[in-house]
Amino acid sequence: MARWIDFRSDTVTQPTPSMRKAMAEAEVGDDVYGEDPTVRRLEEVAAARLGKEAGLFCPSGTMANQVAVLAHTRRGDEVLLEQESHIYYYEVGGVALLAGCQVRPLPSDRGVLDPAVVEAAIRPANIHFPRPSLLCLENTHNRWGGTVMTVEQTAALADVAHRHGLRVHLDGARLFNAAVALGVPADRLAAPADSVMFSLSKGLGCPVGSVLVGDRDFIEEARRYRKALGGGMRQAGIIAAAGLVALEEMIDRLAEDHALARRLAEGLAELPGVVVDLESVQTNIVMADVRGTGWAAQELAAALAAEGVRVNAVDPYRLRWVTHKDVGPRDVDEALRIFRRILS
Image (cartoon, rainbow, N blue to C red; front, side):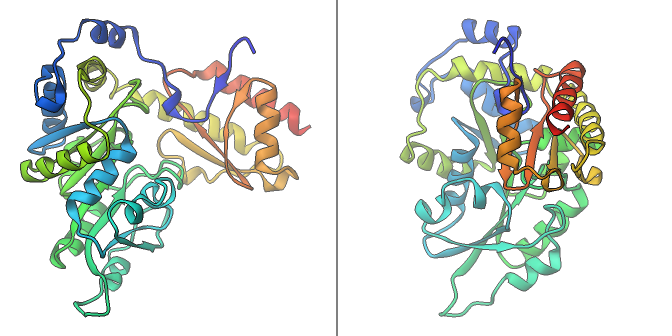
């Protein structure tokens, strides 16, 4: 295949020329000893961007989420989260495997929990019950198609958790997408949470990495768990340098990805047998229900791949399409043309 049109994820993005230059010229040291100036700078800039005291550079968002759970909980605690959340669905049972905690999955409206549902799920102190200690939120929400959670919604959920003594962790892998879509600073979305993770390697275009932020005591504890999980990196400034470029250059352009997702969603919705909930297309992810085509999602994904278009089948009936900096309007139009031909 001469060139793939790749809508599988924004994780497939290639680093920009300015990122590659920054990486080649990065000043480095041994980060486990706290001696990498570029990593330290990234952690400081990331924390300041989200209004927190300190940051921790991690190899992946999954590690950052799991480190946060470990730092917030004790073995045998209960973690409340949304039933389609990334932490619950895509992190290999890490909350149970690593933290020894029980998860309590809760239903939502397009990924946004109802404060009353959360409050009802927080059980009182009782020797028979696990101790509820952490509420995990997700913004934007991956499996709900990139839907956003507003400042007010986040604050209302955090208020319930805090009144009952729970901490709040925000999986903000695509938090800057949410901020751009809502037209608010990212630190306002992060403010109600005790800790926040965001990914550099998705829409921001970096090759590697996520950052976990919170207060200094929390980050000190999280750093210990990062080391325990094998996340202690050495001359990591080479990859942290790309993150600094991303925070400077790549956030505002996320609006282009959102506009492209809208164009894609409207085109998909016009195809025979394809259903798209256009109200859920709020950022750069489009979920297309294909059961009306008579094809299974995996079969359609394979047929599209044979024509040079890559998408992910997330279940037997849905295809997930993700827009990013390395696809454009022509790619969307070509993908739609190919899809229409396959269906006909």
